[in-house]
Image (cartoon, rainbow, N blue to C red; front, side, top):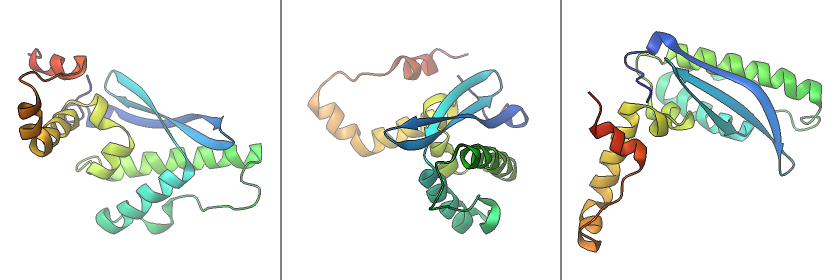
Length: 154
C-alpha cells in the first residue's frame, strides 16, 4: 500500500502510452508512490475538468494544460505530442501541489484506491454517509482485502 506522506519526494506520475477505446483516445497514467505503482486511464476531457478545478481552487497556471484541438486530434503525431505535454503537465501539477495533494488531484490519480491516507478518508466518508443504513440493513459489513489490510498494518 502506498504512503504519500512518507514518499512525497519519491512520487512520480508519467503518461507512458496511449490507447484507443471505443474510437476515443485514452491516456494511460502510471503513478508511483515509493515502491507502489498503479495505472489510471483518462480521456483528455478528464484532464480539462481536473485542470479547471485546480486553476480555481489551487492556483495552477491557467495556460499549463495543452490546448484542445478539434480537427486532427487523432493524428498519431499529434497524439504523441499531446501525450508528452500531458506528462509534463502532470509532473508540474504533482510537484506544485505535493505538500497539499488536493482531493481533486488525488481522486484523478486514484489515490483513494491505493494510498493509505486517501483510502482511509474514503472509508470514513462512506461510513459517515451510509453507516446507519449499513448497520440497520445487516449486522455484517463487507470490507475489501485492501481495507482489511489497513487494520493489520504495524
